[in-house]
Length: 129
Image 1 (cartoon, rainbow, N blue to C red):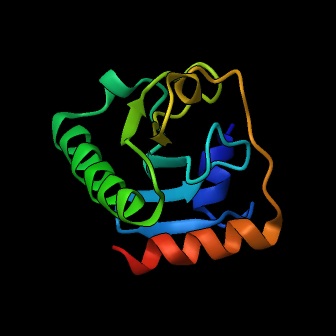
Image 2: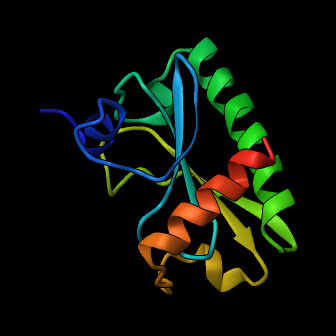
Image 3: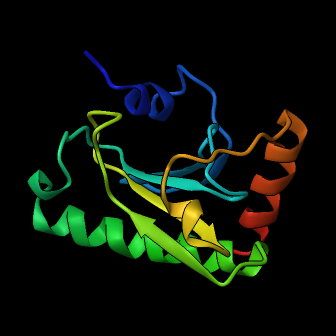
């Protein structure tokens, strides 16, 4: 069965896309820890990040770095945090979270955003790629 991320990659579920290439997709997390919380996922469905082959893993890190740089240009923050947890969706992915305080990395405190705010933010980040 396809993961929710595979359904997003295939266009079966909409997302607030930041960037995409042949191997990866970046989109805003719809249940964000902080404004700009972005997910970077390989298009190949692999459950665990360390099961990804070396080339795809290195590509994911390079893709994530490019997105992190654009996030930092777009969102006022002290730094971009990165987390790989992988328990919530059985599809390897990287969380990129603009940070001003440690609580934003704890996945306990979420923020709410309107559809319009998500759309505006995704376009702003895209403009900084």
